[in-house]
Image (cartoon, rainbow, N blue to C red; front, side, top):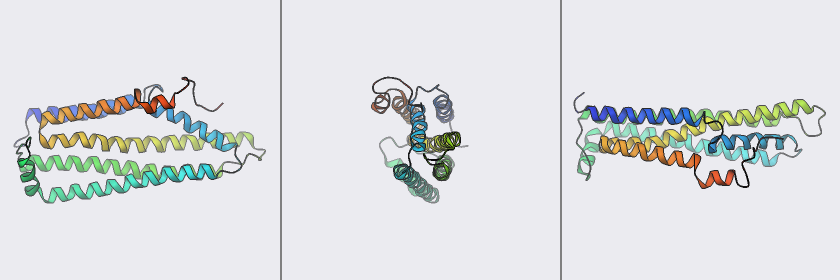
Length: 233
């Protein structure tokens, strides 16, 4: 394709490798990252839920999670619509980018390829958020199906709580993947200003996401007072 250089190919390959590597590592880190720590709290939450007769608090928390997921799913649709608009106004958008201080004039085909890539990222995010919303619904149903504390079915109550916790973990995992797509979409925007900025933006986003998982104030708060597991007793 005219205008697609080896430098562009290298930057795109680095972007894909960074996303894939981070995805694999963060989901197989052995429990050291913030996401895995919070999964332990999800299990603890469901075990506490199973020992409550009144579960309005649990319903309120689940509603908050669902509302947040629905917001991001709607935002993804807006982003998809905006990206499609860019695709239909390629000439006008190219002129805008060419007037920027660091703007590079790319061929029409290359510019449209970049927009299509951005569209794919937002489409992926939408599917992840939409599925996460559905899974949070399933988790809410499983909370409702958990026997009350006064029920003699102790083992069944514990098993249902564990199932609800696992469903919540899976929902949170897909939600996190959707958010990750949003973060990497910011890095992808660097490509519109050139391959060098694409490299820099990808590295910067990767660094920020890594720090949030392993060296952030949020992780410090989640492990405050020791590294004991928040899993259910």
